[in-house]
Each structure stands twice: as structure tokens, then as C-alpha cells.
Image (tube, rainbow, N blue to C red; front, side, top):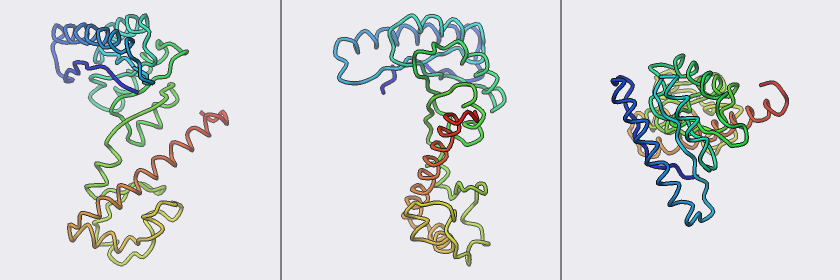
Length: 216
């Protein structure tokens, strides 16, 4: 999957600048699509719906980009000042996207946002969140996020998550990982990242199964 170059404006922006950004992105996306269609190379190109939190501009962006032969629809740009505003925006945008094309939410992949966005029809996500927090010592578990650097884990010889099957959990204890993080060992970031990515894959598999089972 490839995404065209766009102009993602900040959240706090004038209406005039936001309008300019939306139409600039539309022009760039149309040009990118025209070039892509000349030599597809087994790649799918998604457009990026813009408009900030302005519902009228989001509707204009959806209508225009839906008229072009993109393979999928991504929702990007400024997505709100907090999670509640993000979900409110998705409540407006998602029902307007074509059901015949897959969709993607750009740059969002924390657990609560995923759990709240999936029921609105978001198909896929991307974010550095799981790897970024791992590098700072935060570990995602079925009992919630833990800070492995905390002193209470110094003598904890359990795996990070007793239900996890990743290589980190199979081979290393919380106590050892706590030591690595405190000693600023580079391998600590790698081991925690392996776990967080495995955890996210497990969580998304569960969500997919819940969709198939009619729970979502």
C-alpha cells in the first residue's frame, strides 16, 4: 500500500489555511494517482481524506476523492485535540466512505483509540506507538500497561505477560528486563519492542475474531 504526498496541517490553524491545505492535498493526490496508474507495479494506492475537524471540508474531501479510482481511503490530517474529538470525527467521516473500498486511519494505534474506532468501521491502523513506548520502557499487557523500570519489578521473575507467547516472554523475566532498562542496555528496547508488537498482533487478531463473531 502506498499513500500520496499530502499537506497535513496542524490542529490550530486558520480556516483559510485549512481550506488551502485541503485543495493542495487534493491536487497532489490526483497527480500522484495519475502517475501511479501508468505503472502500478502490484501496489495499491490509498487517498488521504483531509479537512481537520471541519465536517464540511471532510465531506468535500470524501466526495472528491471517492470520485477518483483510488484503491482505498485513508483518513488523515489533524484528527482532533484529544481521543474524544477523534471519535466524534470518525462518527461523521466513516459512514461517508465508500463501502466497496478498504479504509485506513493514519497515525493512530493506541489501544483505547483502536477499541473505540473499530466499531465505526475502521479497517486498518498504523502508528509508531507500540514501538515508541517500548523504547521508553512501557510494556503493553493484558492487565494494562506497566513501566518495567519501576523498582517493584526488580525481583519479579514472571514474564511480562503470562499469556503471551512472544520470544521475550518465553526467555526473559521482568526482573532481567528491569535490569536491562536501568542499565541502559540497547537490547532492552529490542526485547520490549518484540513483546509490544506481538501483543498488538494478538489484540488485532482478537478484534478480527470478534467482528466475525458479531460481537462488534
